[in-house]
Length: 168
Ligand SMILES: [Zn+2]
Ligand SMILES: [Zn+2]
Image 1 (tube, helix red, strand yellow):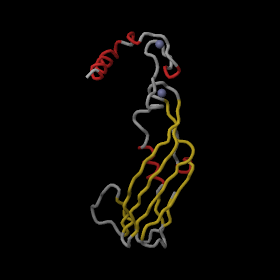
Image 2 (cartoon, protein in one colour):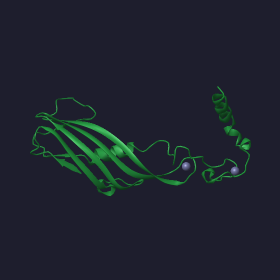
Image 3 (cartoon, protein in one colour):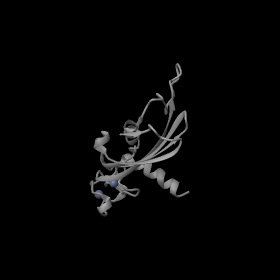
Image 4 (cartoon, protein in one colour):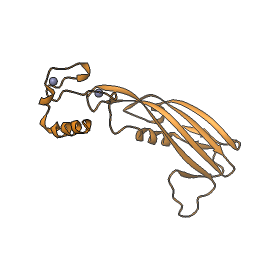
């Protein structure tokens, strides 16, 4: 996936992409299309690329173990310098392009940032009630009848702490 930059005039240029995740080699848990809005600000010596994207992915909820779909979002900026790279210069988000370059390859950055946008905590919804510690019932579907005080003793210190905080 690339943006053609030959004949690009100085100034701001906008591009929209809507590509299947397969097209940019994104595998599980991604599915469907990745949509990206890209803005290039070009001067005679550099191009600043601002990208925003959204992509669908499916996960298993950490609390209730149900599968759910989620739309992930991310953005990043890359600065491209047109010209040869000075000795020993090594910076993140800074790329040197030969003045003869006619395109910017963005597939790898989109791929990397899509992977970075996967949340550490995967929760199907903000108020997911999870599973009963005692009988394993999905509490989003209703109460199971177990007494909450019989919760797994490993959780008791946490429950007590939470009650203390709530009573402040
Ligand atoms: Zn859940
Ligand atoms: Zn239960």
